[in-house]
Length: 350
Image (tube, rainbow, N blue to C red; front, side):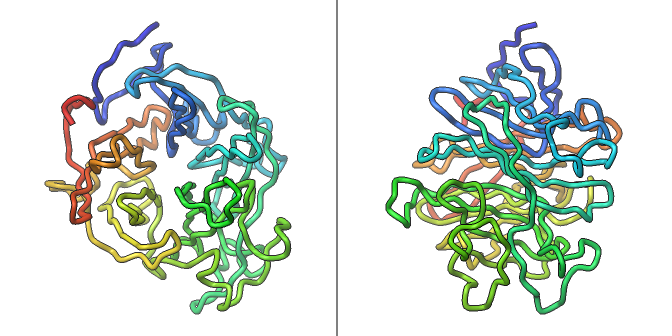
């Protein structure tokens, strides 16, 4: 079944080329060549029957072709298999020109949300299959408030939950590879961590000669390759983007599946410090981010401050049918971010 859309219909079911609702939740977009690739959680069989990471492709952002399961649930390690109620959430994919690899990061989890680890996978193709490399926790740091006991942080490192990848347009090492960062909720969701990745984008750029280890991060290292932001503010669903040399991030509060009021913050550096600016949603009477939670911001015309806000409208009882909420996001010359509701809209009238 072919679809032929020429507009976005936020909050409605969105069929792919097969006529099935696009199941790419908590996901993000990769532009590679002349195509867009949309990755996300395949929740088509429900929460406890996780399929893996789905992949769709498009040339116009309206009509999406199903490319299959880029990372299958059965290809995850034993600890994340279905019988252990394992699943992966909020997958994001970036391309590394040095290694010529597509690199996927994800929040690896099990029932109870105590596993809370980062997962990394790579592929030679944007559509996969992706090879799962390992899971771990990038940082071990004792916050002033102490370790989170539920996730066993003192032994395993600080927890890793809602996450996002961001590739900057800066190359601090001068090796032709732009700096990339992982941004995630940690310390039991109380604080957001931002960490620069290594040149291969396959782990964080922490000391010990690039080995995949978790050093005890000291205050001296803080701010060099990683930082703690929104300390004790309980923010999740980080969604970063850049405009006119400044770094923006949209976050949500932590209310489970229920939507809440978004907040955006701005910084002069990808590691912060981020200054909270307030709710970006205009005329959002319910203060629920138009009944959605942020997952990605897609640049459309950066010079003019035009982006697409991507959100999920979670439907726990029918998770695979959760609608996508794509809305126009603008940044004015003063740096103010605005997201406005539209029942239907297109790039041509934006």
